[in-house]
Image (cartoon, rainbow, N blue to C red):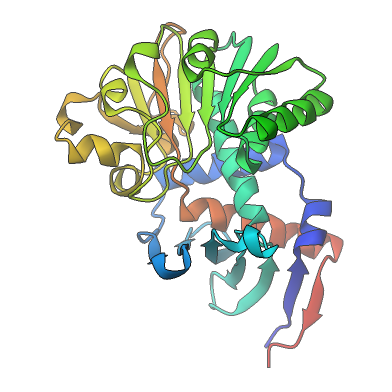
Length: 331
């Protein structure tokens, strides 16, 4: 049996920053999802209310890739009060031909953050208006930062607006992004004003109540909603979804089960929306996500197993080339 490679979060962060190359990897994964026989089972999700936690397990098998990955992603949301991070987890990389374990990526959620941000970059690449001077970000966490960076790699943004429940965190993020991007970044106290001033908005929160109202939508707006990834979360008013010109989702089944379309379906409104288009079909050129800049579009990202397999395969490949990680015997 071959040795297993171990790599930790610190090494991953040092060698795999967010880049357009990562976005290209995730774009290719979505294309494969639309054009090949990918095996991607439903998310295995375990709610742990007694400890304010949850665990998600995601995977996908792509015949054209040399490896596939199983990812376990725990979230224990009382951990910060204990001085611990709320998110952790790892990815296990297997040989696609033999099933033997090739590597264990001890990323503590870092690669999930990367592939999630890259999916936002893919959405921006295909769906955001070409002229997008103002980007609005709702949320102040890690994804708020990474989604901003991914978006600005795809569009020439002139200014960024941030809204968050915690003003101190919003101000801190605004300062950090201003330093990183050398662009004006302002904290907006009104979500409505943020939406109305922006050509693109990214929502990045775990909200269980809608944050964007139907009356705020305007011609040419694109929204990427990536916060809703469980049946209890919801960032977009279902009435707003009814008014959209195009609705693009990473997975139709997941969006209806655990994304923005779940609330729409539960209210019996699904038949009144525009037909759902997958991001993979857009990436593959089988559908057009935005026909013109006056359309109002939404991309609902729930996070798919193929993203995990794709980014882990890319990391494993580079580990081989650069001799990264530590080898240990498999038996």
